[in-house]
Length: 411
Ligand SMILES: *Cc1c(COP(=O)(O)O)cnc(C)c1O
Image (cartoon, rainbow, N blue to C red; front, side, top):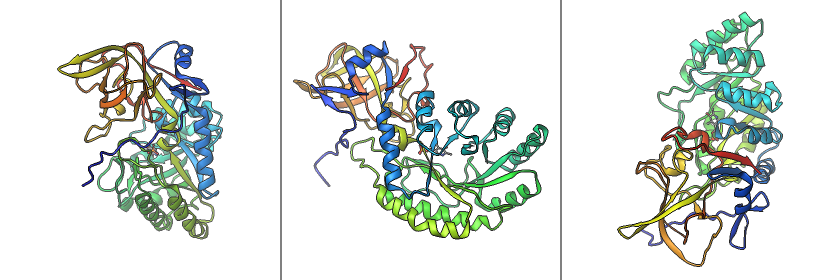
């Protein structure tokens, strides 16, 4: 056993000048003044550009990149990403509306998610986007609504594979799941699609989120391609889209290391000729959420009180789990771990101390940093939570305790 406690992977995407964090080319203190309030989220468009450029450089050029909007549906972020990627994936009518507002070609927008209701399906058919079917009932509903609208719906089948993504932060497949149609039931569903007036596009197979291990992603991609090739035998029309999901992770916690893209890219490169040969019309799509936006965002809160309780120092701030549930450790974590956190306006500081950063909510769950070493901070200082661009504000219970709303900016 190592005696060295793991530390956070260094955060190097935001420059520190004169001990102050810079984002969007300006000091954090200036940005806070510009925003006009704390707490806020800030997302850096330069980092979005760089992330997409990195993927374009590393991945085979035939791979199409989609953005999974639920990771961060802020309209300016979605609009910016829409100009960089090949398509958007949405999971609700609200997200569909954000996606359509970007001007993205509807043919490159897809809609996944269990329990899509008739008004959502109607909107999707009217817009001409691809509906990723999640059940046999949904299939019948889509065909009926399409008939009523006089439009042929574009559909793909979201398959619940017979495997699961190993070492994934959040499992989305394998075993009984509310997501997708079980692989075993898919051939019958494909035959039914062939009997109805539907434009069959292909398959969507997504097996899990927040994966930092290349081997696990490679294994999932191998099984995804194998499964898709097997299912394609029963397809009612040529497969034109093969969406292999997202799930690329980013380092959040002590001991996490960044995903090594190289072997994942090499494995995709290895598969593409086989896909081209067996499914000549298919575009392979990677739909990433977290990996595109997560590292480009920060959450900024202000210290309102500093208190010592039985020898332990607490920085009480004006933000917390109601804006950033994931950083509080209550969004899918089994054991609470700290996100990377700094005092943004005095990153190193003159003195360091071990403190806990908490929010204003009357619950012991409202923790942003538990016993972390930070620069010594006081009332008015700005605390920054890194890796906050994905599953932040919209994945948090904003109404809990009725505190003021958070704002978001793209810089
Ligand atoms: C959430 C989700 C994604 C994105 O997952 P990430 O782990 O953020 O890349 C992709 N596809 C579907 C269907 C999803 O539900």
